[in-house]
Amino acid sequence: MLPLSLLKSATTLPLLVELKSGTTYNGRLVNCDTYMNLNLRDVVCTSKEGDKFWKLNECYIRGSSVKYLRLPEDAVERVKEEDEGRWKGSSSGGGSGRGYGGRGRGAGRAGGGRNYNNGRGGGVGRGRGRGSGRGGGRS
Image 1: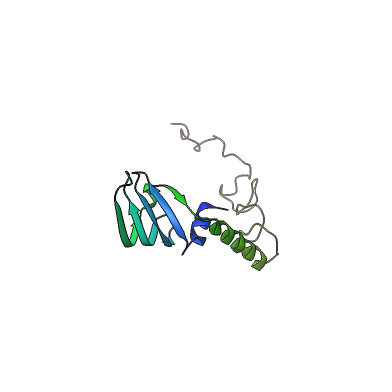
Image 2: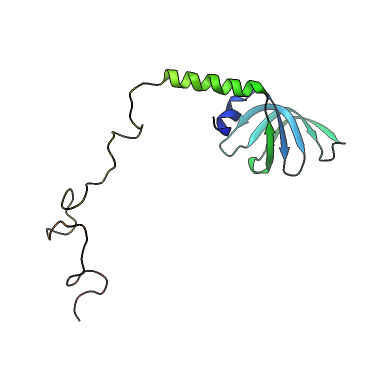
């Protein structure tokens, strides 16, 4: 189970978010994105010292400022149910899920596939004969 999938399945559930600054936000998760930016609704914000409180209808929290999140146990159960449904609904035709199978896109070596050296042998290296390589030929 990935943290992002856990968060996405926790929408509409209560959530506690503590920021790196020490401020905490308690509210219901509306949305989260791939950067873990959060949208909360019906939020109670508490100061670092715990002596000041603010009630907010909505708030947006940048993911890079989050220290930790606390989710209810229901969120973990939701992810398990969604994962089971996803695996049951997928097709059972093996493979790696990338293209048509096989090992890659290349044509291989030693003369197979494209002819990059204009018909001068099909070996693996290019050699350093006349006019090729770094130094050029004779001067």
